[in-house]
Amino acid sequence: MKHRNQVFDNVLDLVGNTPLIKLNKVASKFKGSFYAKVESFNPGQSSKDRIATYIIEEAERKGILTPGATIIETTSGNTGFSIAMVSIIKGYNCVLAVSSKSSADKIDMLKTMGAKVYVCPAHVSADDPRSYYEVAKRLHNEMKGSVYINQYFNQLNIDAHYASTGPEIWKQTEGKITHLIACSGTGGTISGTAKYLKEQNPNIKVIGVDAFGSVIKKYHETKEFDEKEIYPYRIEGLGKNLIPTATDFDVIDEFVKVTDEESAHTARELARSEGLFVGYTSGAATQALKQLGEEGVFKKDDYVVVIFPDHGSRYMSKVYSDKWMHEQGFFDSINEAAAQNIEYIK
Ligand SMILES: Cc1ncc(COP(=O)(O)O)c(C=O)c1O
Image (cartoon, rainbow, N blue to C red; front, side, top):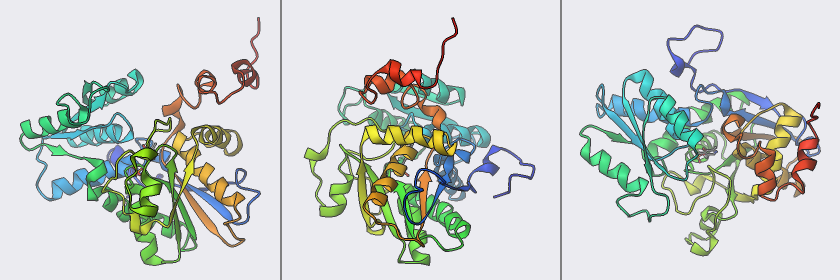
């Protein structure tokens, strides 16, 4: 990987080597030092650039991917965008099977990046032939030489972060890191990063961030898959209603749950107080930091790293929309909220 003051052959040379930026305000009342690993500095504006590049280059090395082949995945989110970006540069076809719940903006973004998008009905069960899982599987079987990324169940998702995010943080902190806080969706980021860091220093505490409505925290504590834990929530990208094999529960010390509302307000606070325009899960991770801080977990010499997975621009119609915040009941009054920063000249 190169440094930013060099000239690059293509956009993929910029994947990884993201900055570690000190949080000067949001955690100032707690003991210790706090830093964010800001993954929106990747060219595709999220940490998923790392897994897309790594998994595709592994498939090339093993001779599984040949020029012009097709890469398939089931997401309208960051991973889809990153796979589309890598596919363009490397000359592959990118096929994404997504749920009809995906916003038109997201689908347009993927199409802009050259992906072929199959929009599948959201209301059918996972084993229905029309579900996005089944459509992806069928396309994979039909297309000879295609590769199915399958990020929730792919060990390479963990390996990608073991090979890059972990070593970068160790180097950037000069080995001083004492705590890692990261959201867990597929679990790839936290598992790979934690595995590397704990190999350097087994005393590093690793804290996963989970949503209310997800089974992950309870599964970590009891090894029980409790369906009663599952209910709808708004944050996209953390927590799950299944247990991904891309999560290595053994390297995670504990999980902290955060609410949709507090995470949304904390994401907004990051923009206002730190000048960091980052996504909803960055707000969630910082919310977890605050909860731990309030419990008095951190000491004077602690060096805490929080992973910020993506950029705020992907949430303009959600967390960064006053209207959306109001509709969720996160503001008392939309006029009250909007009036804070807007004046209409008549
Ligand atoms: C916005 C966002 N935050 C956090 C995560 C969690 O990362 P991981 O899947 O590596 O656990 C994801 C990925 O699913 C994501 O898209």
